[in-house]
Length: 396
Image (cartoon, rainbow, N blue to C red; front, side, top):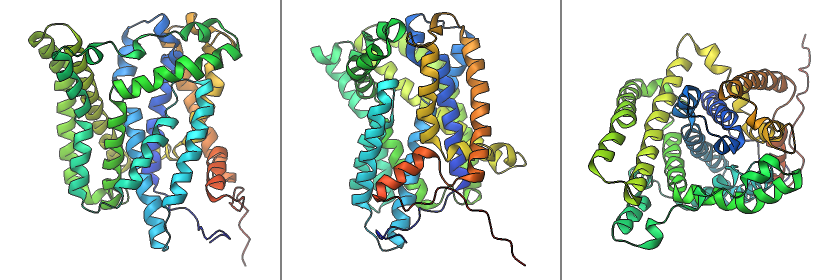
């Protein structure tokens, strides 16, 4: 225990780290093909786009959110076992994360650290609820996209604000990213980009979905789902089968049925947004459970390789934007209109392989990633946090 009365972090769970690393990979591949959002200025909806976005867009972010809920439980549970009330420290931890997100958002307007931090404060109010069934009921209300259903109803009644196009449909900042200087890009990200980001998270239902996944992660943490995955082997495999079938039905059939049953207009658009959210959840669930199957099989060495980048997701997530946004933006190489989606995907895959190797070598020498260490030290308001690994002393 350190001089501030804070002991070391909760024990790491390799499976959770590996799942988080897998989610970060998917997120990075989406950003690579999306050219850090400049793809939309010259979209190419070919097979590369269809596969990458079909597999990872909206799914990897959702998996990250679920992992946050599990991590929240591990941190709070570890503090409770030490007899500490960690709520104040966790609120401060979220405040620091929000500040990191604000800075990151100046480079990449799609930053989701701010939204994680903002939504994470709700977990401090939900954690005292010890009845998991109540928590799952609240999660269901969020994941069913209740606010969007209310908006669809309001739009059907002719309410102007409900029927209007979402704000994020307009993109006034794209020109600054594609052609402007670094200062112009930062200014655009801090103004129009920030407005678009928050509009998207609110009007596309990402915030309630994120909160619902936080709650599900909290419950999974309580029941030890990631600590003892084989305890849930039968339920896990049944859920995998159901989510796989549901993914196919929702992705290939539900949208067509909706289009056939309802005329084009704002109500149908809102219902499609809800459907996209459900597709993302079903695909994410199937991916996560399939990954766990691999982790618990002879393929564990391959799946476990994702644990190292999963332990430094904050560092890698921010670094990806700092390094690769200039590859596509006008103030850097400006390659957004020169590279095909396939080339962008290849760059992303090679870059991810490099990140995995880097993470493995990094943790041979260090306890935490650089930003993870700074985040932990700032949370504890002192620098008494081990960073460099000391060589083990030889014993006779």
